Each structure stands twice: as structure tokens, then as C-alpha cells.
Image 1 (spheres, rainbow, N blue to C red):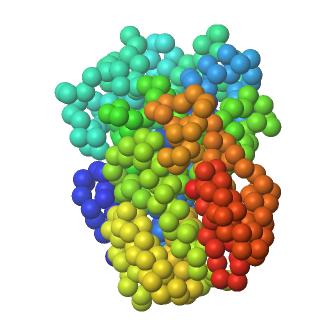
Image 2 (image 1 turned 180 degrees about the vertical axis):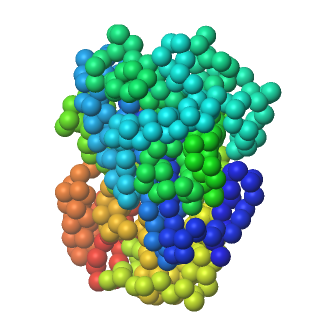
Length: 503
């Protein structure tokens, strides 16, 4: 039976859906004012794997991941770039979708935008005000009265006495208590017209926290089966969501709370506020030149080998663990993924196969995934299966390997095509790159391991084949050495066939 670690109870518990055969999953998504960074990639991939396994377990899943398209940072970006709010958000929504597609992240069933649910937010705010949990302040804002909600702090473990104002909550003189947070922001004269909505409180816009209370209830109802998000959302965002939803409607907001672990750079969490972030497209894009803000440049050319490496890098760690971003870790992930693809290349298959859940490897995979989505254990089962395939040379074992890996979104490329893509994440590429390094030494030049074109490589192989036929083995060895120096590995197969891959 599936066990999930619940952040609220701080324990691993059996997952029992509220409705038999159905699971509602709500995950807090992106604020679309900039490109997604690798910390976002971890959240996107982690919950993609979670929803895949819920479906593989026989559940009908409704997966909702919201889009925050009204926020102070978005307004600032729009003003600075002389664009309308919708132009900024649409561009970065398209850029986000391009990143998701590159990483093999399946689209959620619903991706509601905050601006589409302003009416629902105002209804909840009105209910909170009637219950004495919200008040219309002198400056026009509507604030939540934190001390009036008795359960505040239960998710984060913070007590009201220990809390201090300032953790993403601006302190204003019109607040009754510095811990109160804003539900509705009164419009300011200098703000653009497309950033305000009419309400009984005057023109304004919703605060950040209220949007998820409105969208989750509208699309899934309460309580939710699972509510999830990144590690920084536990407080104050999710704590405030609980106060809003449970304060307005009673009961429980979510039966299970899930939070993925942080992506670390040295001892700090990767974040835009710390300036230590690296975008997804910088890491797996075929070009490192970041596009400008135009509709055309939201898309980018992806290196498929590096993109799957990044997904593998995330998946092979448990979603709750802290994960360290470093060039050596990406290189190790690339080498490990390459080994799995080498198995598939060495043992050709055709078609596909259903998973044999009675096999030891599939059982080990299932045990791991049912243990709080232990992808590290599931990946270990994949390597055990690859070892079995290498020993037996059984194409059926490789088909099982691919079928199980598909549940993690891995090993779905043609091995030949995969290995003909270059990668920056090798020792050779790292050492030979002449371009300036980016961040902690990751190679900036995407062509560092692609000095020879596909046509040039095939021409070298043809010349080597001819030399072998003419028994000119010195020339054959010279060509192999030339290709090896260029980062091209050759694998001679029976019948005179030579396969190649970029090392």
C-alpha cells in the first residue's frame, strides 16, 4: 500500500483517497515573471513523477498546478519593460511550458491562472470578514487577523509568540497585528490599469496567498487529497492557505501535505533572491544565448541528452532530500544515464511490453515507489535490471527496463539518437571548454563536445571500414584514435557494423 510522508503530522502514513479510485492533487506552481531555474525544475519533475505513480497505481487523478499571473514582481517587470501585464505573463508561461516539455513533464489536468478566479477570492474574503477573521484596514487593504485563527502555525510548527513579522509579509501601520497578512491590496495611483479589479473594498488586486484557497476549492473541493509545493512554501504560504480555507469553510484543507526538498548550492538554497540560480534553459539549451522578451523566443532548442540527464539527476534522489547542485554531480548523472542507454544500445529491441509485476525487479521498483515515492530505490531497481540484461543479452529484459523507466519519465529515447547528441557534462567537455564558465564551473559552451558533425563522423567511420577491408590496420587505428580525441567512442558490432556515440 502506498505510504506518503505528511508534512503536517510529520509522519509517513497510508494514503487513503477521500473518494475510492480518485486522487485530487493540488500543487502550487510558478509566479511567471522570469525564467524557471533548477529549483523549479526539481519541483516540476518531482510532482510529475508523483502524479505518474498515482495513475500507475490505478487511481484516476485530477492534477492541478496553478499559475500566479498577478504579483508585485510581475507588475514591476511589466513597468520596467513597458509591457502590459498579460504580455509579460503570457511570455513566461510559454517559456515555462517549453521547459516542462524539455524535461518530459506531463501537463497537469488543470493549470488555472489567478486572474481567472478573482471573483472566487473576493467571495472567500467576504466570508472571512463576516466571521471576524478579516478586516478592512484604513489604507484600503483587507487583512487576515492571524490571532483570531486558533490553529495558525500547525503546519510549520511555529507558535505565534515565536513568529516575527517580515517573512514575506510586509508590516504596515494599518495592520492590527504585524503578523496579519494581506488578502486584498488596495490599488495605488501609479499602478497600471490592468493590475486592478473592482470590489466592495474598492479597486485593487488579490494578495498572493488567497489565490490558492480559491482555485483549489473551485477545481477540487475541500478537503484535498494531497496539497504540495516547494520547500519554501510551507511558511508562510501554505500556513496562510490553511488559515484562509479552514477559517472560511471549517474542516481540513488537505488530508496530506507534501513538500519536496531544496536544491542547494554549497550551503544555500538555490533561489532568485540569493542570486545563485541557474535557469533550466541555460543548463540544457543547445544555445546559451538567452532569448529576449518576444513571443518567438519563449521557445528554445533543447539538447535531449542533457535534458534527460537533468531529469535523471532529480529523479535519482528522494524528493524530500536536500539535493546539491554541482558540476561533478551533473557529470555523474550523465555518466549513469549513459550506462543505462548503453545497455539498450547493445541489446536491440522492437516494440514495447507491458510490465511484468511478478518479476523481482518490478516488485522491487513497486516497493520503493510505494514507500513515499522512493525514486532512489526505483532507480536502483533499474540498474539491477540493466545488469541482468547485460548478462543475459535478453531483449525482453530491456523491454521491461524501458517499461519501468517510463513510469519515471526516463529511457524513452532511441539510444542511437541519444548518443549522437553532444553533452557538456563530461570530464572532457569540462576540461576542453574555452568559453567562460557559468556559476560553479558548469561549461558555458554547448558545442564543447561536438567538434565533429554527424556527417564528418560517418565519413571517418566509412574510411576506417575501408582501411579494415584493405587490412590497413594502422590507418584503422589512427582513425579510431582521431575520433576518440574528438570525444567519439566506436563500438564494432558483428557483421561489420560500427556504432558511435559522443563520450
